[in-house]
Image (cartoon, rainbow, N blue to C red):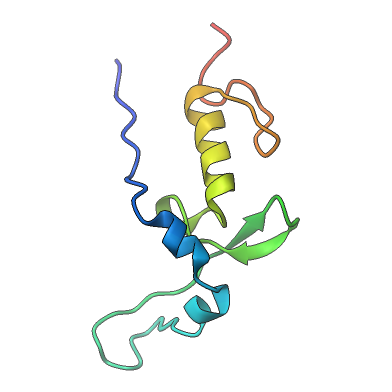
Length: 96
């Protein structure tokens, strides 16, 4: 079986990356305490460039802290393109 890879749209993600993490964390409302009908929590992930925990913003379920890391893992995992952040050269692909 073959299935297509459908990437999420990337429109506006540079703007999201420009927001200070403190501003995002200040608006966390896990249990909808303010009653506006919107709840959510921040995801903390490992930033490979900084070698430290960071706010997750990109990818499914905010699993990546930066566009650079998101793209590196997508290139590496989906099409086998290695980079300094994702040095494995095959990802989901095989040598064949």
